[in-house]
Length: 301
Image (cartoon, rainbow, N blue to C red; front, side, top):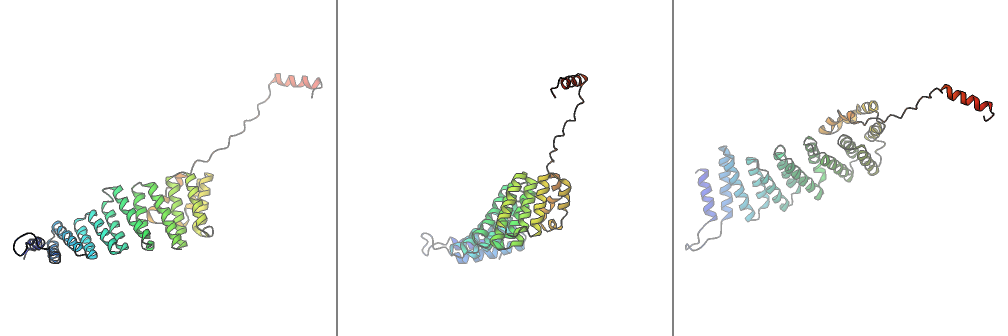
């Protein structure tokens, strides 16, 4: 039996006539979903991925009709994998949410984001943010930290400077919530690098003060000491000191895209303002000298 024959049988199961030929009988979703799945697998083995994807989508729809939401999500995921369609990953995510599998739902949204990274930057960002919000809302942030980092890296590569800084700040607060102080310190330094590279010195100072205030003990950590030294070098306009600080090994352990920004950070150091030089004393003229001698003779001095 061919895949098309299976599809035809599935359609008949969904459109059965009543016993006496009047009206429609109740659709046999259980029968149809199994037939669509068989047809999908057969098309997949024949490398006809588009047709296979369509069959898995129809199978997912039948699963929803019989309240089998987890299997519906799995079928949507398979269809998305075959068709490379981000919207199908979104449908899979929706079903995983209904099932109560927040982690899997967030995973589907990240896969959708990765599919459109090079095609639609804003759509990819939206999918990343939805994925991150699911991890936050489900109190499953410990499983979403890598998604956070990949989203930040995507923002850096795509020129989404403000979003990169905001996500880095959110991740730092997430590490604090998880009581993961070492990671919070490292993320605070990452945020400082992003701020100094993309924004003004004043914004970097403000964000660093926030990190210091909510991270007790950061001054004793290497990340805190190096961050303070780097910020001081920027405030002083001292490129030599900034270059020396940026050679610290602590920067090697930042996430890849952030670490790449470190190499060019010394060029962001503002020009140091030169103090105005005092004007040299001009020698007095002969007339002024005569006038001074005359005044002295008169007894005024």
